[in-house]
Image (tube, rainbow, N blue to C red; front, side, top):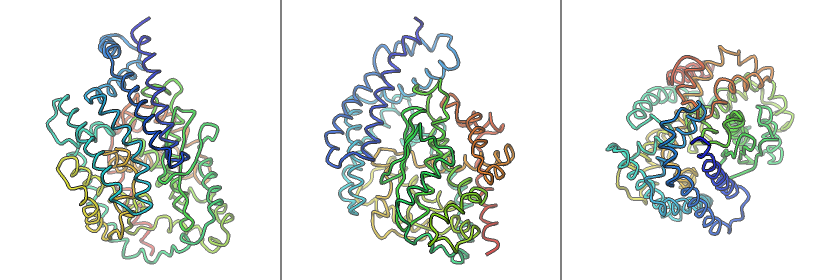
Length: 500
């Protein structure tokens, strides 16, 4: 038995424990009873402890050191590299603190849900402070282990998109602001000319569920390998490439919300479903990074899902489902409506143009609280001030302000920038697809097989065996380049609003 085969039992155990934890997280967010969380979080703490032991032990340490010196296949090398990344990420953290943190975040989401529902930031604030303290402590452990003396927030950013730090992101976001803010000012003068009252009429929830199911299936979501439920905050999770799960949320007076959440999460899900069978249930059997993952979801939600070509075959069906509300709304009117841009408070409901301003606000707050001492009670004011500064609007309550996103309750500090990175990646992929497969023709004919086959062949099947830049370079001969996103926004919104 060679050294890699000796490693396999540990990989299998790690995967099994991670799968169990993922199932509990899914259940907590969807169907678990409200009063289950205390006992369930204790179980998750124990499972997290076992996961730690399966990853951090003398045998795995010895095998990783041995395998670094052995001749391995390309797949084996990728698996060992990714395992080493996970090992190095967890090893500096004391086991008792790791397990306690996991138990805390298992409960935190339910506290956040209750706080958001009741507009009660004071309920969530102590939990949020404890999570932030853990994240800062863990980042400090890792920085010391790596001999890194820079901002602690860089350590957290690296967990989601390797190679991106605050210096790179500050430059990236300043460049976006220079593009987005003038465009927002330009379109805001004309946005009132787009009548979108139809979106706020009453839309039966059961009919919306049918529409979301049809949309997911239409773009390629395989319901024999996936399920769709409801949660307070839409998300995607996966156990392997034959069990991928998405959620959405429905609102009676907002038709667009569930539709575009479904398309967004469907993009995530398709990525996971397309992972090669040889990779699934291994450390490389998932998306290569959160930024690249968001690149797939934003590609489907915005570049594809808000295009006229996408809705050409679909809009008559939507009109038929909601005759009373949409009978007098033409396709051209609908396309303007789903692309209408105006400052708003809720990130997940934000239009395509202003969306990254929401991300910049979160990035700046995260950078501040991780790199500095702060008063937890003053964070809502900081949040509100930044919304007024960047979007010209101020939340009236914390439910539509600092409590609107689930991510911090999960400990996902460093995640939000991935949305902006992914949005830029999506524009770059979309620009390539327009030349590689005539994507508009595919969409007008409802031919998603051609789109998904291309994405699977050139991007999705590789999982974590290739980096973001390796995937983009392999497909189009070019690394990550945000200029595609800047050009996309300028071209799209200039064209849309020039006729108004």
